[in-house]
Length: 245
Length: 106
Image 1 (cartoon, rainbow over the protein chains, first blue to last red):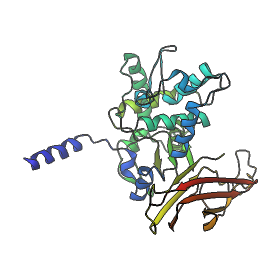
Image 2: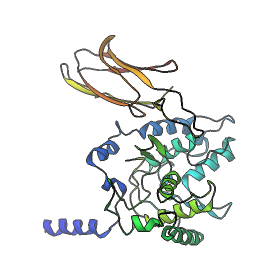
Image 3: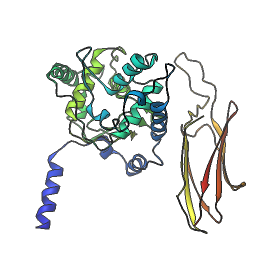
Image 4: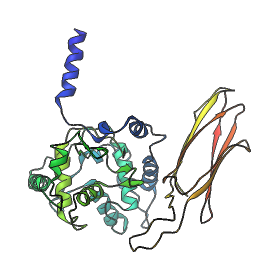
């Protein structure tokens, strides 16, 4: 009976062929991410926790409006439809928007220091939760558009995202493993960057990698790709701020 | 103030050898890299780290430009008395930061 149960569990685990980038890393890097006393992304989590509680110039802190405990799940719910614009918004976009609208801060973009720190803090609060992007029907055209971009060959190397991350995931490109590209651990501390970075930054370096000209910083293509990737990874557990090679 | 991650085991026994792990947020700019305008970025690194256990220096390290950003150090220490551990980082542009952690030996 126990064997049947174990087998059943093993089969259930194998049923989902999706793997996060974590599974493709070396044991040493996995240990670095798993240990909160070593993971350098925790420096940003600390900064984010301080920012959450620290009042801005207009005396409003994040904690003024958001009750304690509400942090858990925020990262897992995005991207979702922003009621004002009717478009999807990512967690980083929401943080930036909230800071501008309620705290009188300047726009920073996904790789601004404050947005990254709060993003890391909220990613930590949602660690282990399944990624659950909005099921609103208005998401569908964005998912579709993102999927088309995903399959679109581009750049001098004439490669699409899918050529590597769907068709050749798990194999190696030069010395590096090709992951399936599920965005379960953003913002992510990349050793190559020596700092924490956002998902758009990661996408930008992939575009540069196939020798394509990256989209403009405010282009809707980033949003479409992020929306598609979140849908593609929906149900996978969030890792919190991750470490990547 | 730079953010730090300091891990000291919570209540070690007298005579025990404990592992201490420290990380500090620092760019460790080497002084060799160009910025997006082609100008060389000035060097900005940490050059020295030390740990004092009740005022006595028990571990020190010199750091150089090849060390990665947000340097992580781990070292071991035999603990005898309760007291304090003071961690000091020093570097370019007059950088100096000290963090103190109290240690309860049982």
